[in-house]
Image (tube, rainbow, N blue to C red; front, side, top):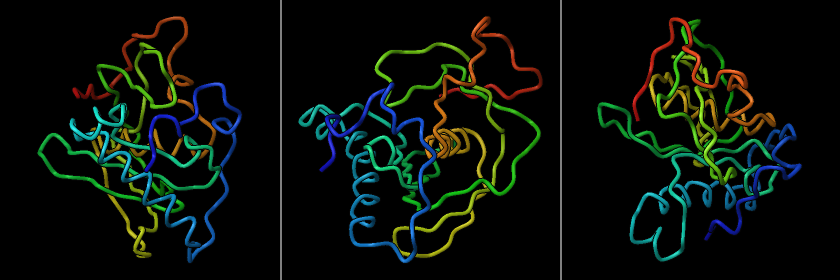
Length: 184
């Protein structure tokens, strides 16, 4: 089982690398890694398990965050309508996105970043992604709101990009013109 001990912190070189594509069909090791990413995110949202194992709650986790430079992510969250998005994906890719932007009003956080870094992170308001599930089927997801932001955050990890790279250093809370503010 993954714990906070397995998660590498900001400044670790793996977090700035572009991760390798996962060769499909995946190896048993890759299947276990991807399953463990999803298990961590789910466990971290269960208050009893999180307390017992000192897990910091998260809604997404990417393989580079556990020092595995491969294109795998796991996301487990509900949108504002209560729809559950629970996915563990190999080689996720954004295949289209809106011109319109969105951002989380509260800012973004990251399991690999211990301190809060305040500021708005501009993201695409709507995205379509493709990836391959743990079960080996190709999926295409159309996302908006918090799920779209979460998937973009995790896919960025696969490209060596951290959320704070997008924050305006001179004016972290500068309004993002025409963007949708999303409450979390």
